[in-house]
Structure formats: structure tokens, C-alpha cells
Length: 409
Ligand code: PLP
Image 1 (cartoon, helix red, strand yellow):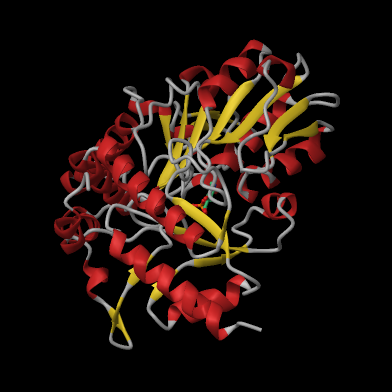
Image 2: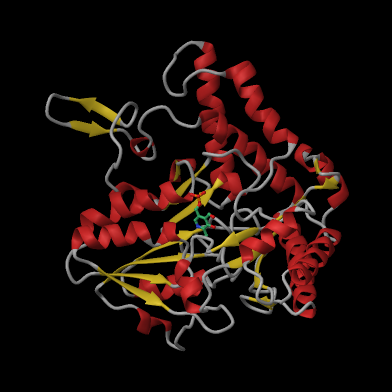
């Protein structure tokens, strides 16, 4: 194992919980991850010692709050490869970040005949905002399909996916429903070649692997703090300076303005013009602490650990007779393993697993296009984080087999 998991597990207080005498086996970090004590303490310390509204009070306490918030911005932006902190707009997470781009950048620019390219493996939060934008502007949506083994079905010449009417490519770096890791850079180069911008859904990538937003060619990169050991309602949108300057404000209110007149206003600088009203100060401070925790583990090692868990899970589930979705190779399969088992409905399976305190997700995973593509209404999904062990996967597979017996016809 590339990480000292026993030591890591002691950092997560919730892992000491038991359910009906059984230790918690949490395999749902793709939905939301648990938080180490240092993150819980960082958020509590902010409230305990530094709480005031950011960017408002000129008293010392207010300056401390502002400083903590802006320091968090620099830490989080730097973690994702943006050395200029002003490139990070804080949001409540990925959904809000993608909606911000669709509303603030795309809608004012798109018109009839323009094209938004998506993929069939997108989470609904990287589909529906684009449908709304298309409906409002007359633009059309075009989808990149999927192969039987859960990869993007790409032509040899990626340039053929885009033409001069393509304005946006919106693509996930890692699929939450299939685990697939996409070669975003190759797609981004082709999209840029046609003059389109590239919006990357980084919700399942930022927690699990080293990310450099510029190296992957993202004009915009959206991520959720609560999936990367941070508090709920933390996360953000990283953009290039150029694209952020082009983007219109979406929410109006306090702090996003420079001057307000009776009939119009002028805007504050990027990124503040996109941060109307009181922000998630304590949560983003907590996320910065989560980022420092991940940095101390080393993102290469985090990725290696989760790849080992994924390999083991795929092999054991295969051997147990489950149908595993997504790529076979863990070089392109991140730490989310979706599967179905015999004729057991995923909800029944999840319920039986709960009797052994095993938490997995069952359903369409907010990716109904994926479910349609593979002809199933739902799958079961085990997803991993830094605190998971091979033994927990044994517990999972044993419980899955037990469920198979319960529901055998
Ligand atoms: N995109 C992907 C790939 C996801 O997995 C998720 C959440 O599961 C989201 C977007 C939405 O994230 P949030 O609910 O944090 O906004």
C-alpha cells in the first residue's frame, strides 16, 4: 500500500462508528467523502477564534477572517495548478460552478446554430445547465458516445468532433458512474483548434489525482470540496484570466460591485464580481485544510492507493460473477466501481449491504444517459478514498454474495 492507511484511518473520527456492532465500511466517497479531524477543527477554529464576515469589517477580527478566506483561495487554487489565486471563484461546489459558466459565459455568447459538445458520461450537473443554455439561445447539443467498456467513443481524428460552430466542449475528467478517466488534454487541444472553450467537470478528479488545470487545457474547471475531504458548500470554479474577464456576473448583491447607481452598477474585479453576498468563509477555510492534508499524503500516492483498491475490487467482483461497468484497466479507471449482481436490484443490494454496515450507492448516479447506454435503470457503486482498505472490499464482496443468496430465485 502506498499510504499508511491505518494511520490515516485514525484521522477520521467517523470511522470509529459501528452499526449493530459492525464497523462502518464507507464506500461512497464519490457521493461525499468523510472529513479528517484537522478539517473539522479548522472549520471550528474559524468560528471559535476568527469569525467575522470576509471583505467587510476593517477591525482586526474582520481582517483575520478576510485573510483566512483569501489564504484559502491561494492554497486551493495552487493545489489545482493555478498560481494566481484570482483565477479561483468560490462556489458551493461543481453544480454551482458549471451553472455559473453556462449562465455567465455561454448564454451571452451563444446563438442559433452554435453547438455545445457534451459526452454521454456526464453527470446531470454537466448536462442540464447546457440544456437550459441551449433552450435559451437556440444552440444545439451534440454528444460524444460511449464504447461497450465505458470509454468515450472517439474518432481517430479528434478534430472531426468539432467545427467552427462549436463554442463549448463540456467534459468530465473522471466519470462518477463508470469510473472512466478521460484524456481531457487531447480533447481540449482538438476543441481549442476549432475555437471552442473547454469546461471540465473535475468533481471526481480533484479529490483523487494530481491536477494541473492548465496542463489539461481547461478554460474552466469545476470542483466540489465536500468530495475531497472538505466541508459541504465548499469548492469552486477555476478559469483562465481571459475567460473570467469575459464572463458576466450571474448573481447581483453585496461585494460584487464597484459602484451602484440608480439604474446600473459597475463590477468589482475578478473573482469577486462572481461572489455576491456573504460567502462560505468557514467552509472554504476548512477546504484549504483538507487540501493541505491531501498534499501531505501526496496526490501521486493517493492515486496509487485508490488504483490498487480499484484493481482489487474489479477483480474480486468479476470473480464473484458481478457485471462490472467501465474500463478494465485501472490506468483509465478511477476509484469508483459500478456493478450489477445477478438479478438483484441495486436498491435491494444496498439495503442488504447496510445490514453489514457497508455503505454503497445504488441508483442512476445522476447519470441517466449512462444507464440508458448500458440498458439498465440503475447500478450499484462502490467508491474509494484515502481511508479505505482491501479488507473492506472483502467485506463488500462477501456481503454482495450473501445478498445474491437472499435474493436467489
Ligand atoms: N459532477 C460529477 C462527476 C459528480 O460526481 C458530481 C457529484 O456527484 C457532481 C458533478 C455534482 O457535484 P455537487 O453536487 O457537489 O455540485
